[in-house]
Structure formats: C-alpha cells, structure tokens
Amino acid sequence: MEQYAIKGGVPLVGEVEIGGAKNAALGILAASIMTDEPVLIENVPDVRDTQAMIQAMESIGTVVERIDKHTIRVIASNIHSRVVHGDYIKRIRGSYYLIGALLGKYKSAEVTLPGGCNIGTRPIDQHLKGFRALGAKDAGVIGGGMIVAHADELKGAHIYLDMVTVGATINLMLASVMAEGQTIIENAAKEPHVVDVANFLNCMGANIKGAGTDVIRIKGVPVLHGTEYTIIPDQIEAGTFMFAAAVTKGDVTVKNVIPKHLESISAKLIEIGCEIEESDDAVRVVATKRPLHTHVKTLPYPGFPTDMQPQITVALGLAEGTSIVTESIFENRFKYVDELTRMGANIKVESSTAIIEGVTNYTGASISAPDLRAGAALVIAALAADGYTTIDDIRYIERGYEDFDLKLQSLGAMLEKVDGERELQKFKLKTG
Image 1 (cartoon, rainbow, N blue to C red):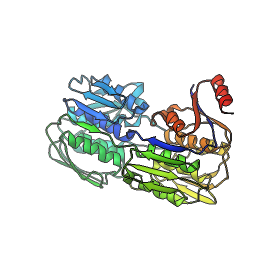
Image 2: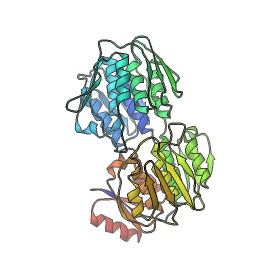
Image 3: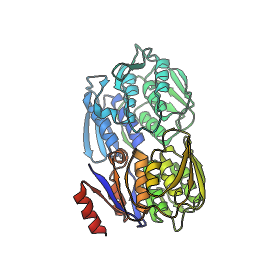
Image 4: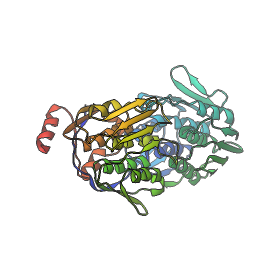
C-alpha cells in the first residue's frame, strides 16, 4: 500500500497554486444534472471525492466529458435511473447532494447512505426534515442503507434548520429551486461553498437570494438551463499550505485564492507570530521563529474552520507555552492526536478540548492518517520533524488534496510517495 515517506527539517519556500474547492465541486457536480442542457464546469479538483461523484453521475446515465484535467462538460438529458448505489458512492460525504438534485428535477431519489471521514456524528435529519416540508412525505432511510425521497409535487416552504449545517443548506437549495412558490431557509450555513453552489444554480436560471447570510430565499423556476461556470479556490487547501509554511518556518505564497475566505486563518497565523501579505488573489505567509501560543475554537463560517483544526493543532504543538483548541463542530475530530503524540507532541484531550503544552520539536515516526484533514496535518508535522516519517492510509488525504506530494516537493519538501520497503530505502538513501 502506498505511503508518504518524509524527511523533515526543510523550510518550505516558493509559490503554490491552489485548486478548485472540493466541497463546492461536489454540490455543483450534483446540481449540474438538474438541466437537460450541456453544462461546462471549470476548475474541478481532480481528487478521489470528485472522481467518485462523477462515477455516480455516470451510473445513472449522465454523460461526463473531460475537456482537460480540471474542465468537464456534463450532459444529463438521458438520465435513466433515480437510484444511486455502489461502493464508490459510500466513500464520500457529498453523495447526498444527489438526493436534492434528483428530487428537485424528477421528484424522486434513492441514494446510498453517505460515507466520508469518521470525524463524528453527521446526521441527515435536517435534510429529511426539509425534504418533507417541500412535499416529500416519505423522505427517510429504508432497509439496505438507502435514503429515499419521493413527492407528487414540490412546493415552497419555510424551513428553519435546527443547527447550522452546510450539507442540508445545499441539499435544500437543490431540492427547492424548481419547487412551486417561495422557499425560505433560515439558520442557513454561510460558507463560501454554499455561496458558490447558489451562484452556479443562479447561472442556470435559478432565483436564489441571500446565500452567504443566514436566511436564503428561493423563488422556484420551471426549468434550469445550461451554463459555463468556474469553481472557487479551495479555502482549506490554501489554509493547509499556509500552516505548512508556519510549521516549517518557511516562506510560501499561495496563489489563486480569495483572501476574504481566508481571514480567520490569516488572523490566527498573525496571532502565532507569522507575517501575512495579501494581494488580489494570493496570500504570502512568512514564519521566522517558533510559533506563539494561542487559543482557538472552531465555528461555522466566518469563524475558524473545523477542517483547519488539525493543522493549527500541529502548529501549536510546537509553540511556546500552553494553547487550547476547542472543537465545537465534530465530537470525534481529535483521533490524530495519538499519532502526533508518537512524534513527541504533548497534548491532552478532554472531551471536545485539546490542551497543548508546546514542545521544541517533533521526531519522525511511523504513523497513519485517520481522516482527510488530520492526514494532511500529520504531513505538515512530518515536514517539521527531525528524521524520517512514514504515513500510511494516504488514500484519505487524496480524497481532498490533488497532487499534494508534488506541490510540497515544488516548495522544497523532501517527500515521496513510496510503495513498499524497497522504495522507502531508496528514498532514505537519496535523502540521507
């Protein structure tokens, strides 16, 4: 099984291009099947999650033409099934967007329960509550692990989400854009990828207002049409490289970003002693000294993202003094701490809080990636560690980071993807 082999201790220096936002892409890909006309989508990240979503779309009759690595044309005029199942779709969380898309277009959907990283309870009750409000009286989970939703007709409704949830916000936008009348979603998520999906739908002829605020108003339209659209840059990929610069005492410019989306990340980097320079579409992070300690709590956007929690914890593990990280979104997001402890970190987890006593350095070790973002954070730790680190289960990392190893190599990282002991020894000989 492939793993990352890393020799740490080299500051990352240079420029890195950020790809399209995975979380926006999943919603936009699902939305693209809601018209019979061709849709051209640019800046699609070529990662495992988007590959699985495209495979699911093709399984029900959607034609997906790859123009180049990051551009696809979707033609969904001959969808022959409203049922999506298969092992590939169980691997990703965003598969549930196909429920909203199929329900919105055909008034019928059956989709295998979603998978994704095991970072805590991620219920779909708010999705089902919204589908029922729109007219899908039987929306629920049936035997065999299938989510179903069928309706004779969909009518606009006033939906108050009991909790801020990105998935339900996007799914209910999909289901309601062609419903009769007006739909209001209150307590909606405000994340950039929610706004991006709304913008995409509006380009297809939908009438959505208020995306990016906590109240979204949707006037149903009879039909959606084709369009051309470019997905926004990935906020979390950008933040990961920004923290990689901080942890390795590097100087990295992340390009093709929207600095506004990175404000909470940049603010914490400044707090721990980094220099930040912003331009129209780039952010430069310069770190010349050991990080300073701080406290951070994950919150829905525009707060500090839960998907950046492992990365800042890795940085604070090397900070002077005591830091506290509080996770308010997912209750099982500190699984990686055991792996980080193998590298010399001094972290105590109590319920949803990590108390971090900073150490002067990490030490290389054999570790495993427990999920997508934690896996990327452990790579960052390895880049700063003394000696060699091997990281297993890198398939998790590849779910959301395209060419992660190649991008890090371009910044000077001594990192390679290896398969087996022989390749590992070759890497050690080459970098020793």
